[in-house]
Image (cartoon, rainbow, N blue to C red):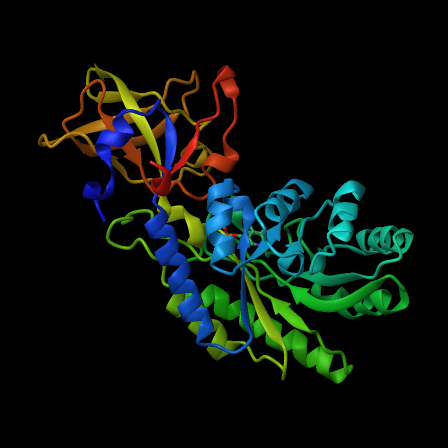
Length: 386
Ligand SMILES: *Cc1c(COP(=O)(O)O)cnc(C)c1O
């Protein structure tokens, strides 16, 4: 990999900014996931569509045999269109609208991940109107903290997600009473960009405690879904393009005690797609300030909001210059002080017209883009198609 992997001549001919997806990196990532998850009985991997719903990305992931984890009706539609089988689509979300629930019912999806009793009652009602029985899992809030950015921690008692653990038996009992829902599993998701396997271990311990309670009431969940959250190395997209899936799956295999016949489901987003993508932007101007050099580029935070939203670091490379390094602030054209991709970073000597690759932009890049300032949404190109 490395800079040589970019087809620079072809990229130079494309209108910037745009997303560039390396299909080989994506396929290699998916092969590694299948290899590592495949070592353990009953492991089932879904893709969290919210990380990137580009149809070309979805098609490659579907071809690798993954299921789809959706958090909206639009994502269910995108998954069905990309050819994901209905029985591999799950639907989670703290606020499901009636039309979205109906869409899930019409497509006979694998499971609704339910986050409250009022929601359970509405699903039961809507399913009854269609003479169907909806399969439901309960999303429990495990009160497990992930050592990551506060805005992407979801599994603490203070977060809006999920049902409190103490209510587990009550909600399952409620589901047993309702004729048009069937309890099939438990669902968890503790956060994102998690690199400390200890966080996943803490979740395993919590699941084990809850399963003991279920055992004592002779309740059996068909499946346990532990969500996603595995992080990637934003600092070294060339050296470490494939996340450490071995440690991730091995942790669950070692720590989480499955019951006979039970399956363990995963919903990976970022770890599947982050490293295959780059935001390619053209340098418009080099501005020399009193103390700094600014590389002003034609991409801005509407095209990749993570640096502005989470102070996230993305490695940036000049893919068209071989000149000795110099130090720059890389900034966009938007009239907001937060429109900065990186401060005081070393780039090969950069001039007007040079292409910069903002790396690890495959997850939560294109999908979070906006048209702020009446800008056009950038196009996503797959390396296969260039
Ligand atoms: C966001 C989300 C995921 C994926 O998270 P990543 O950190 O991208 O792996 C999985 N499951 C649920 C319920 C989510 O909300």
